Amino acid sequence: MFGQAPLERRTEIARHPRLTTKGAERLVLDHFLEVLLAKPGALAGSEALDQARREGTFTPAHEAFWSAAKHGLGEREGTKALGSRPAAAPAPAAP
Image 1 (cartoon, rainbow, N blue to C red):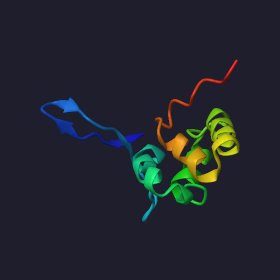
Image 2 (cartoon, one colour):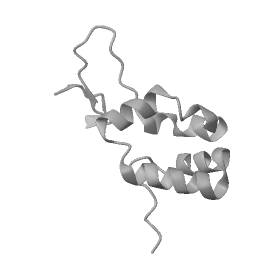
Image 3 (tube, helix red, strand yellow):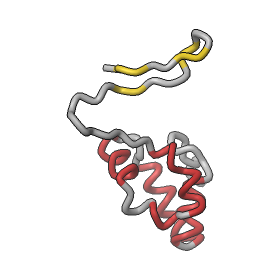
Image 4 (cartoon, one colour):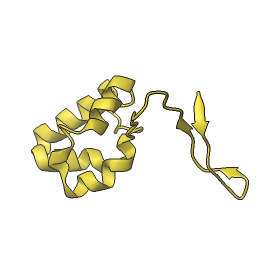
């Protein structure tokens, strides 16, 4: 169920689910990716990543990409590589 759909010139520009629990928060990992480029160490323990994993938006493909990037580039640069592409579109697997 969606509760918020802000409009600009009669065009829906976003869609946010209704939160039914008092004080509930919904963090969207995509909104934090620019920050993670500057502070990549913050991703591993972030609430946004935890929520994305629980909701299934941070998929096994994302986990595999992140793991491979960290292995090949190191922890910091590997995490920055994850932040340089949209969370919804992980890099294709190498042949």
